Amino acid sequence: MKKYLISPEQNQYKANMHGHSRLSDGKLTLEQLKEGYKERGYSVYAFSDHTTVRWHKELTDENFLPLAAAEIDVSQQGAENFNLRKSFHFNIIARDPEHFEQVPYDNKNYSIQYINSLIAEARAKNYFVVANHPNWSLFTEDEYLQIEGLNGFELYNCITANYGGALSFTPEIYLYLLRNGKRIYPIGADDNHSFCLPFSHPNNDSFGGFTYILADKLEYGGVINALDRGDCYCSMGPQIHEFSIEDDVVHVKTSPAKRITVMTGTRHLTTLPALRGETVEEFTGRLNMNLLGGFILLHVEDSEGKHAMTRAYYQGEDF
Ligand SMILES: [Zn+2]
Ligand SMILES: [Zn+2]
Image 1: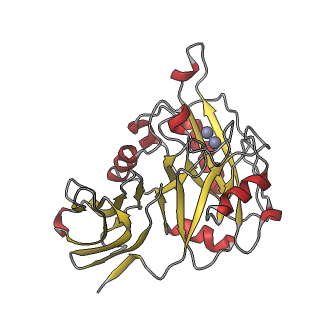
Image 2: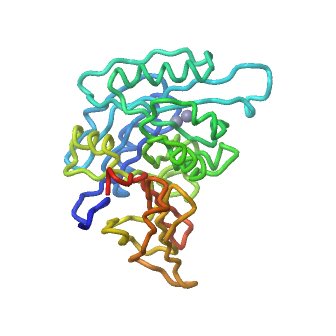
């Protein structure tokens, strides 16, 4: 029987899951951020100013949903250059915005053990937890493997390319974690601070990457439930209209793409590259079901070099 992993019937809400306003070190007001993002088709925004969880309920309207969030940071201390020190940041997003508790922390108390205890506390207080800007943190893949309790992972963090000494898109770390048994969902976010450039400038740190959330309607509980189910994917541009599997045949429909690939937990994959100068929007491929390594996921790249990537869908559970 055909199983839809992403169904063409589902609504897809565009979300920025990480951004800063004047309430911390961002330059713009909440209202300016709402206006700019709404104009570009966003429906969900996690206002994640540093340290303190806030819910800006007054920004809610029928086409815009603010999520209650904060960014927490724990950094190595010492005399050496700041740009060599490891620094772990994570977003906490309240599942129940009417009832949330703060997560107090000591940002100088750097250890994996302390970070794990903070994540455990945030989860116990009913937060959805996302590891932020993985490349900027300077964590190795094996250090990420030691982090426990993450719900999400910023597979794309726009501002990293400006300040992170690395690329904004981190598929290698993400795939490494999945292939080592972590179950973490892919989040795309800007981490916009809007320091000096207007929204209209192509180098602005807004609108670079986002999360498509597949929910029945634009409502707080429903959006959180979709995130908890992993009904979301990371994108910098491409949209996935369908991802389905029937026996060993996968079927994909997307916005115009340079390549569509169904990856697995191993080297095995099935892919459709477009002819040079052309695009593809639909792909039917066949997998060897004995070589999946436990899961499949979908990657799409468009002609501008923008990517979209789904979570892992598990053999025997999701299909
Ligand atoms: Zn950060
Ligand atoms: Zn941030």
